[in-house]
Image (tube, rainbow, N blue to C red; front, side, top):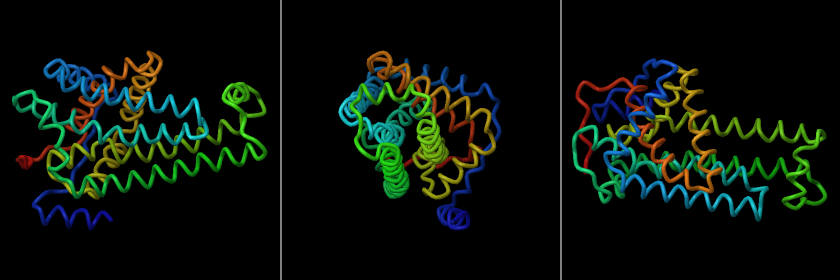
Length: 268
């Protein structure tokens, strides 16, 4: 798999993305830089923030009416987030290069490397489908007779007898979340910035995580924390915090991946 990724890059004249080490406190610096990007282009950033808020409302609706799909829909939020954030990456890229602030170019930024982004979408889609199926199987194993209503389910979560269910459900969810996170840390920015192929982008992203486990734990915790705050504020926080995370992800990519001597200018 690694050899095929290297071969594809050699054909395009692109070296395999090399991860580099960052400090444990680097994620805080990424957020500060992301906030600077947000201030430089607030209206387009807020547009994407409202899109994230809409996704949050959908998650809440599903949880209220079919909570057994809650983990699956949560995974969908985490998996679709990087794709929705592509516009935010483009805003940060333009700000970095001193280019103008505009929403229109960010809406079609995926066309720059559509084929490889499509491959990446398929990979994450498979992860999403397996995760959703695993969620339903776990519920079926522990609730063999009848699914409790929402209030009954929430009460049962606090019962000691259900600790096994919680442990297994949370453990499986963490495994899939880690896989999705590892693939997504820097892959889409790589594909947009360098026109890198999907395989080497995902491998480079995984390599960045393996080189910086402590910083990645901090980064994942900050992302989860921002998301939780967004939901606890009746989705209003998502309007600000999700664009902030998206912009910060661009700077995470810049720090985590060794830069090219001459980075190819993306095709418009």
